[in-house]
Length: 386
Image (cartoon, rainbow, N blue to C red; front, side, top):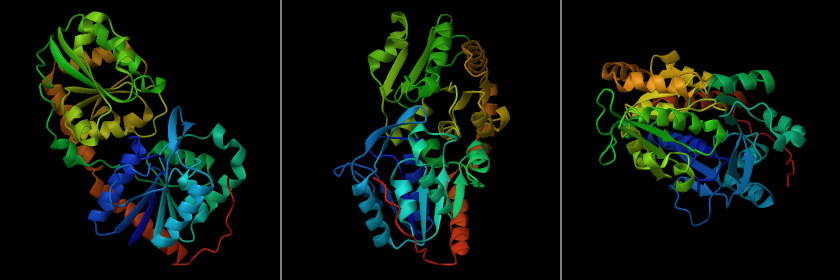
């Protein structure tokens, strides 16, 4: 099968959708399919062989964060040329309702289109003035995939259609086989030590870092060996300014990490903490932590609860509650057996998210989309944008 995949967000900046697209492409290639990925990226960016650059991206506020996307006449021409040259059996776009390459690809497509929806947003101020175009986009999508029950609910209740729920995948072996960083995770004697891990933009409100900070400061007063390992974008000074000076040496900031180093970072913590306060439709980092064999402590968000099988595969605490987080961390750091039991359940849960399993389910959707169009080329007039 010849498969064209469109990523809306720039490959120059790491992100969950970008990682999803790359992992899916590699899993599909491993299954014997021909895959080409179109994504925004600087012309001189190092890219996998299967990725085609659609040019430099620009920042756009989206879903409480900033997405780097490509849009406009130049992008439109590149999208159409890539589709014509690719002669794909199926086109797979991600987040097609953002002003991005994905939307342009749907409007340029002449064959079956599969769309994956990652977020659970029902409104976007950026797209509020483009409802007519969005309706055309939705009508030209042959089959929909939602990465979570919340994302699927949005499709049913707000987008006039259903979707097949297929979760984000995780390359389990890459995380399970990673070596911890030198000197980590260290000792975890009851009442004294332990290492907590956090990955994400610590300045972004919905990531909930202040909840973790408050819990860590309270715990550090009585656990002299407790350490915190932080990875993600941001200024080190902005991070350390949030902690008392006497705790700075117990907080280690890695900054942005590569995918291999992310796996090593997760393997370097006794507990991975996800203190997010909202805006999550799945929880990719949780499956990655489970794959690494690291015990997860997470906010009791619906998306996290579903990934962690209602708390069987990780400990949940009341969202936004540093005291609840502190108590959960204390209990697990002092009880190796409890950590081991959660990790064992996590191994069973994460097996269902392994990319070979997930990719085969995606291929089934491709086949259904191709059958639904019966190989017809859709004769569509171009809808001009920008």
